[in-house]
Image 1 (cartoon, rainbow, N blue to C red):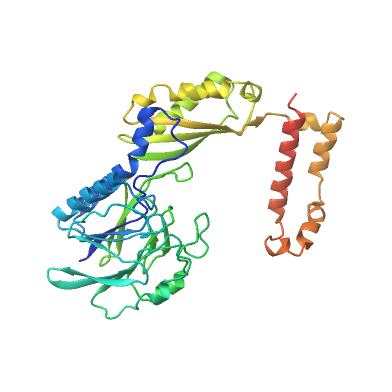
Image 2: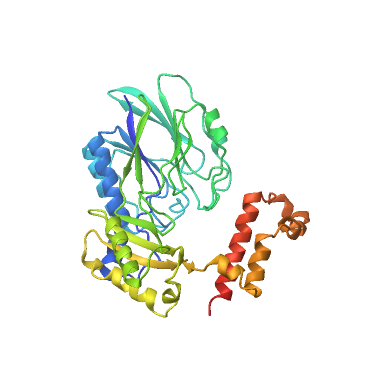
Length: 405
């Protein structure tokens, strides 16, 4: 049997820019979160008795890695060495090999892939060749070319082949396009597993053989929500298990104000959401979104109310080991209004609502856009449901403005 752990995008020493305004205790906890997350990964590897771990790039957050981050990383690799667990790792675009740092000697269980074209490294278990691992480190920050053609094809069925690649799959947006590739190219190599890195969201691009991004080990901003961690892979039994390792969770929760009748009731619901979000032993950074059509709209518009609500939710959390710190409250609630009454009032607003109900010229209105030579390449015609949603949204925005006084 062969069992290994796959992780990527550790981003040790991440500065967490833009968060220094948080209470000191919470900010310091956030600054240490990537280190805590990797310590948790090492503990998972030891507990699961894996044969080796694969780290698919961006071990450090920057190309000038601090001595503190390197010393910490070496100490954790030493824990793996003491447990007889090998480490195969590559560097990515964040921690490429052209960076500046003080070289430290790594434990003997560690293999770091060189920059440039992929290398092939054997893994032996009990004196027998069990796996071949193929990968490369970024020799410079920007590796713009596709290097999959340089990976060797699998040879023989008695040895597992594992590809390690830090790069951007075709169609994955939101990240810089480094070492781009198509999944079909990876499958042509015949490997048993592709250990990917670079995309911070956990994704399975192909099931059998597995082509997987494990995501990063610790969310670094409000877009990287939910559990983050690593995968333990059992190739023989075709099992893969996700283990959450993040010390800090970024979470977003919504509260529908539609049926609430008072600010006090709203505050109680917000406090309930906060307590239901608390995770034992972890920190939570909470974004709260208020929505719905509500009679509380006028109160929500009062200057300072949301700030006071935020302070109420934040109070005392910096002293908690399992804190829930509300870092943002977004008010998307809308004024509650009676459509039938306004539609029958005989005035401008009534005429507007009647017109929106009977509006049947959406396609005529947008015709010029679809006839535009460049625009039509990128947009599809609206479906009837999309037309209705567009009209409803426009109506809601107009009513919000017209009824504000």
